[in-house]
Structures are given as structure tokens and as C-alpha cells.
Image (cartoon, rainbow, N blue to C red; front, side, top):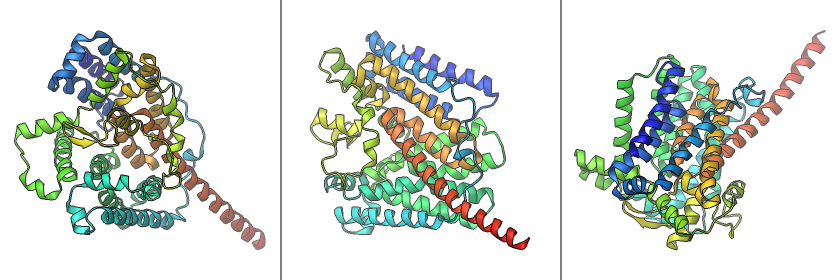
Length: 434
């Protein structure tokens, strides 16, 4: 059965390769296929429990496979082929309030970092070099004090990425370097997950190839993948044990492969939910997870009795009685994949619906911003996140896209308001001249 999964995923990529006539590792469909291969080919080969489920439970394996097909249908549905006019297809916005957004990002980042330092070690050096997960656990239990700062950071980050892309387009190298350093330092200061750090490290590579319109060669792709795996390995030790344990890293092949097995195997949560479904023990939510998406925007500091809107946190708490639960790789929030999230909503039909909506949402986002050089860095950053969210939930993707477009919409709206008075003044000067 693993071979069938491999054939479907690789076959999809080969068909897409023939259509494009060149290999593009940065394309969101390529990224999705890579994530699918790690989830449904590599993970079963290294995990006996998952391999047993795929080979012996045909309903489990075929439902999962049809979920992948539903994802592909959503990705390739030709409803977004025609560009629609919107503010995002207009000319570049006036960068008039950019320093306000930069100040908000810096202030919120420093405030959030200060709050975490106060709640963990009380020492900035101890926070920077110590493990992040234990500090994050303490931080979550302290009345969600950083939720407002976190929302502001998530809101301003796409605006700064847009500003960075415009600065690079206009060859303002000093401004672009400053923005990149601010973004990278800010993410490192507050990060509890590894992927945003790695994506920011890849931005110079992405810009180099895109600015010269050069295809990324397969050897260069293999080098990037090797560096990516190594960074995932090192950053995982940093966030769970601190910098002091990096000097004791086991760089042997066995150590790296053990790390890969843990990092790319989020399927145990989905297996657990499937067993509950098969045994008639599942408490279905009947679409509740979709209703919770807009509620994510409200900081918990403003709504103390806010429900657990995150599917991962909600079901980790339901199954294990606490927000953080112990797993083989340590304690943390369990992931249940987009398959598990759909199963919890409407059973097997929910899996197909959830993955179909997942594909449609990514295709819609690509249609809006994925084909414009102005949004190249935003699309690069969030398309990688979108591909990896297959390991977590559809609602994580929906909330991220909603927040990005809200930020860009407000930014463009404020730019348009500034542009109109400037145009009016120009007309007044022309009239006075006549």
C-alpha cells in the first residue's frame, strides 16, 4: 500500500513537471508533494504501527489515499484561472506609513520577549541560550499575557515582507538589509517553532534565483534539502534543550535519521482519532472547527473564557487532559493532520471535504498573490507554511491566510486614502497654474 501512495504522489509531480517543463522546488505543489511523501511514504517505512495500519486496515489506507486525491482536485480545480481585479492587482502602494508598521513589529517583539524572559529565567542570556519549549509552556499558563503582542506581530509581518520585496525591486539594498535583519532577529527572539527561522534563512536563496530568472537545479535542491534537515535537527535540540546541548549533537547518520523519524511523523494523532472513529467512541464536532476560525483573531487577554479554537490544542486537552502532552519526542501539543481534523468534523466524508477545501484555499491564495513579483516574498513564506500545515489542520491554514489578507487589505486601503489627497493637491496646483 505504501507503494500505491508513492506512485500517486510521484505521478502527480511528474504530470505537473511535464506541464511546467521545468522543475521548481519552490512551487507550492512541489512542496505539498514533498510533505505528502514524508507523511505517507517515509513515515510508514520507519514507523511499524503506521505501516501496519496502512497495510492491514484497508478502510484507513483507502480513505487516506482518497483524501490526497481530494486535495489534488481542490488544487487543480479551474475556478481561479481567470484573474479578478482587486486592490492586490493595482500598482504598488505608497510606502508612507512603513515606519509605523516597523515600529509596531519591533515594539511587540521586544514586549513579547520581555514577557517570556520574566516568566522563565528572568535573565536575557538564559532565555536566548536556554530551551524555548519549557519557557513557552510557562508563558501559556500565565493568562496568555502575550496574545495581543503576538497578534500584532502576525499582522505586521506580511506588511514588512511586502516592504522588503519592494525595496529589493527598487534596489534599495541598505533598506532591504535592515528589514531582513529586523525580521530575522524578531522571529528568532520569539520563536518556539523552527520553520519560520528556516524560511527566513532561505529568502536570500529564493531571491537570488528569482531575480535572475534562473531555474533551480536538482543538485542545488538536494543541497538545500540537506541543509534544511540539518537545521531542523539542530533547531529542535536548541528549542528543547538549549544551546548548551548543541555541542553534544550526534551528527552520525543514525542520529540524523532518528531525528527525521520524529520530526516527520505527526500521524500518531490521526491514528488515535481513527481508532476512536472505528470503535464508535468519536465525539464529532459537526463543523465547529470552521466556526472557530474567525474567533482566533480575538486575543485571549481580551476574552478570558475564550474556547480552545485551535484543533490541536483542543483535542490534545480532550485526549490527555492538558494542553501539553507527552509524546515519544518529548512533551508538546499533538498534531492530528488535516485528515484527522476532517474525521473529527463529519467522519470519512469530513476527510474528503477538509482536504478539498484545503486545496481550494491554496489555489485561491496563489491566484491572488502568487503570480505577482510584488508579493513574491509573502507567497514564498506562506506557501511553505501552507504545505506544512497538512501536518496540523485546515483551520491553521485558513486563519493564517485570513490574517495575511486582512493585514494587506488594511495596508492597501490606508495607502489609497493617502494617495487620493496627494492626487487632489496635484490637480489644485495644475488649476492654479492655468
